[in-house]
Image 1 (cartoon, rainbow over the protein chains, first blue to last red):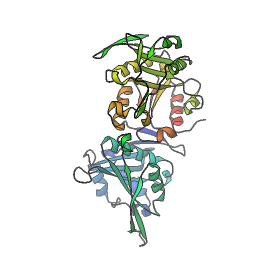
Image 2: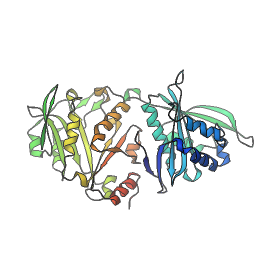
Image 3: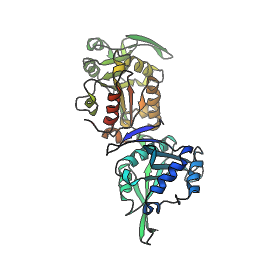
Image 4: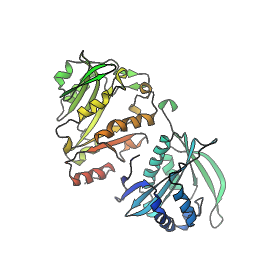
Length: 184
Length: 205
């Protein structure tokens, strides 16, 4: 795919989408440090731990994680990744993760990044994409996923706990990647 | 202008800027029609004649020795109600169609057609674009997946300076495999290029 990609957001700000690079380690740390704690809570990893960021940087080029970032004024404002398995029963499934800085949400930036990763997943020959969302917390992301033809595949009732112990449902969403119109 | 193309499946001549009168003298290959899972972009020769009569249009044809049209390409201005006209009068032109009949594919005919389409005298003053809607692709005839077909289009247009661009144009956004590519002429001003970027995202003054 061709990078960098210029996108103009709903608020008329311009952003550049490009792959995560090894030189981005400190920028990515700063990005996650600026994400509100209430959002970081639901990420699978402790992104304030520099080793987590380093692991993601070290994964560049390994073929199992493909990460892109959106950059505005030299600062990372969004990070999205496609996670792939190299073998086994779920190697046909890619998992998507995305985090967008609060002030860049509802600007279609996340959609642009997801579209990019969907395109990449199709290029990689994946059959399905999976994304998990916390109902009641990530509702905007759930709406965006529906618009991209994801469907609700399962709901794990009261699976997730907030920092204050309130339980939320975890919604697993799947998108089928059609290869031809015979698949529809 | 014309060029000749010799292939393993016959010799063809590629003619650009065909006039409506000239097109009328040719026959239209019967494979340009409706198939089980595919309908040709143009099923009547008259549609090409109509396009050829438009201002600055370049209708390029691939012809057999028997004056049969086995491939065509159309470069015209977009319809007045299309977003791309908002960049200014006659700045953007669309590769409206390019098609080669099923029996004459994979011979490099399409590449020759694109080359001749872009032999337009004002090409460097224009932004030329193409839109690939995956639902118009002959996946059956080419035995390709949507993704393979998409890559084929990129390979076809990239050597001529086309780049893939993001746009929020609704029809293009309907499917992630749809594609929008553009070629910005060397003499297009920075201001127009900037406006083009914003226009792709529906922002225009």
